[in-house]
Length: 282
Image (cartoon, rainbow, N blue to C red; front, side):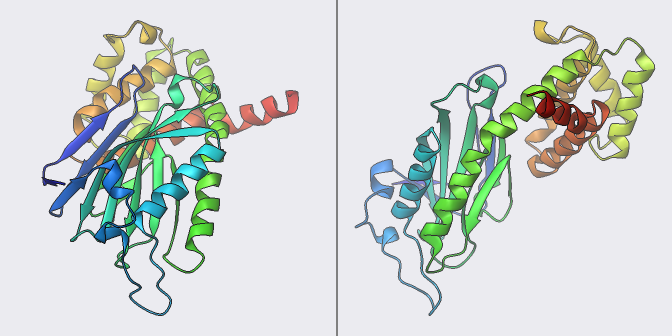
């Protein structure tokens, strides 16, 4: 076991690599994969704290996550396990791989959290951009599943995790359509570009007006060949590039802002209507 108190950020390789940021707020220690999966370890032998409290051991929680992932066609690769509060709370980071072909943009990272002291419900979150604090009170991502430590927790957790994994392919299809429409949305007129950025400020996707010139500069001087075209896809990439610089300082606020920007983009490209038309055609 290794003592651990520093702030940590992890990224997976690739142009559209998923990003995970988490912040330590409690003294913690890391444990190996073999240790966390050993049912004889003290932290895996917690006793109920009340008549309705039925803690799921951390080793069993990992098994439930693994089984749900496998049944949905995914492979889980554990990256790091951290225990806090004298071994009563688990923070487990994992990489999620797909056995079916849904593209590189679906590459994901996730967090599994567990508590045997009734601090919070056991749960899992994963996606292309995951933010989590090691006290596990705050987290955000694309997919989430969880349940309280009650008698039926193992069954309910499995069902909810399986459902979360099952929604990935549907969301990927949605994401691919979004990219297709953004690439087709030409920004020949600067006024259209500027109007979108002003609306981004109004909906909270951009926190300060002074950020707009930075986004425009990134848009006009993009270092990536795939973002040289003058379209909404390139503008959205410029926004995310600028946003990355503030992500480490305020990850939760920035994740929320990115969500607002995506909602705005969906409105601009009329995503829901285009998805409906595509469904009718198919």
